[in-house]
Image (cartoon, rainbow, N blue to C red; front, side):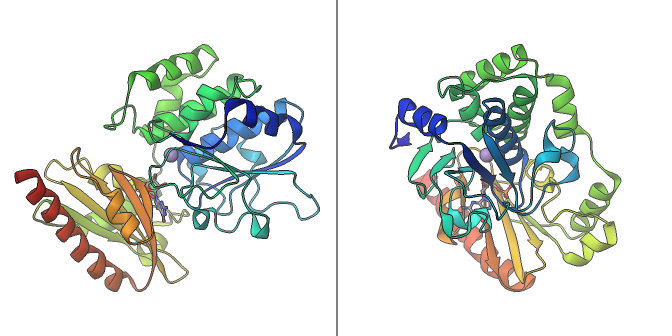
Length: 326
Ligand code: 5GP
Ligand code: MN
């Protein structure tokens, strides 16, 4: 664990602060939203003034989470925060400039590629989710876990582990899950909301990408364009969870998804089967993530980004296989 501060230091930091801003990464996923609400609501319970910020807002699929209506798209300008906290983000660019010049005081994350950009960094790559870190440590940091907080945290664990099935799953995460259930989190309900229920627009959006799907040498890839998004009426700027479907294809050692963004950028996502590490590949492009799931945001046209990234991905898989043989 990369950790330059102790439980006591973080407890003091949290207890001494009154005006706190909490944020997480752009295109927020379940762990980003769950950790934001989990920590944000527990700080509110402790009597703090808390601003929970996600610059992209969040997909309406997460509206089921209690407290989600409190999330702002930018920090109130009239508040001078005495503590800023980043959750589930491995580098400051991922925060979409949520803190402006203010910078990050406390960086809490579980990505192996975290660049330790906070004044205090609490980074545990063995944790299955940032929500798991919070569930484990909130009580030690002097904060309470109530029903709503447990619901938010379990939602992040379930989404980041895709229903407890990612290769980093461990018994500690199951114990944490059991504790969260004891705190009132309804596992079947959260599981269904987070991983089973889908909107018509989401599936329609997938259908455009599925028609374009390609395969070669153990790699599956496809694109989601802005036109696809518009045709489907899908209102998020994320992958609509299509990555989980692509990675379920048996022959996909690696799957790659390109999602066109409206700022001349393309979001690239890699998923890999156990034994193949795509985090180093993502990092080489300036992104990051986990060995089995990584991403990057690249400037350029969809086809150009696709060509560059696919070439590197083929080379990466070949090198990995060559190393496995030798
Ligand atoms: P996804 O492909 O679902 O967006 O992300 C997979 C993993 O890679 C997540 O853990 C996410 O935090 C990380 N990731 C995705 N995009 C980026 C990026 O642009 N920069 C960094 N540093 N990490 C990313
Ligand atoms: Mn996460």
